[in-house]
Image (cartoon, rainbow over all chains, first blue to last red):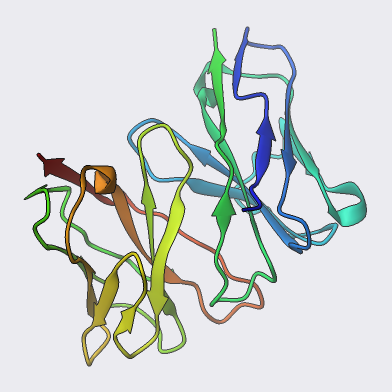
Length: 115
Length: 112
């Protein structure tokens, strides 16, 4: 069964450093999502792509976070500079079309620890 | 986005049915009700979704109230693998693209 791939699985960095996360969605999925999950809370949507275009980045802290999905396939989420409060699980998900009946498939996540 | 209310936690015994409730009184008429679950140290996974009618699949059943202000996820025979956080999510209507807004969810503990 096809899966969403993410790397790295774990990342430890010091504050003020730059970090980047990579996501490869299920082949053929037009919609890609990045979520952030703080321990003990539900995931929060950071950014949503439809193909290569951003359709929702209202919760993305744009002063330090950036996301891209060149060619509408894989995606990179970057944080520069990292802050202590960025410690969280970063989840990538994809869906076929992004329709309200569509299923989102999640990757295993990247656990970020900022020291 | 519609607000949801779920119990913080529930417990069950293995092989017994589990009924997980969710209130979503502000749901719009076009919002689908999705349920996802998250096993420890994993990303969320889809369980089931519905609009107005009750729905069944290999994982669970979804019972939706006639006024759509509440729904219940039913696990017919809980197993230890069903221990997870269960999220009830009205899938935002009125937009071109779906958006999942996760709440706190219900932590389900299954006892052997």
